[in-house]
Length: 82
Image (cartoon, rainbow, N blue to C red; front, side):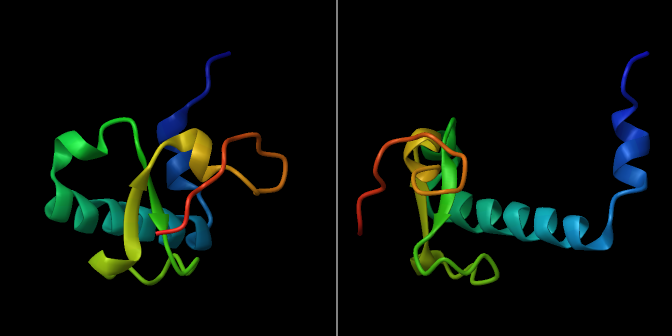
């Protein structure tokens, strides 16, 4: 039986909905700053580690492999400071 992603999204927990909205907001802020082309295939990194701080000076586009470095169970490269 195939997964019903629409249904899964409808029954999603409120915390997950809020987290997804924050990620989307951060991506929109950074897209406005650097452009859509610069974000293709990249993750948005919060320099101070607080995902609720979506100030454009706190956001940076990084490769997904570098972004996952140091996270529990993740394998990736080193994320350079700056």
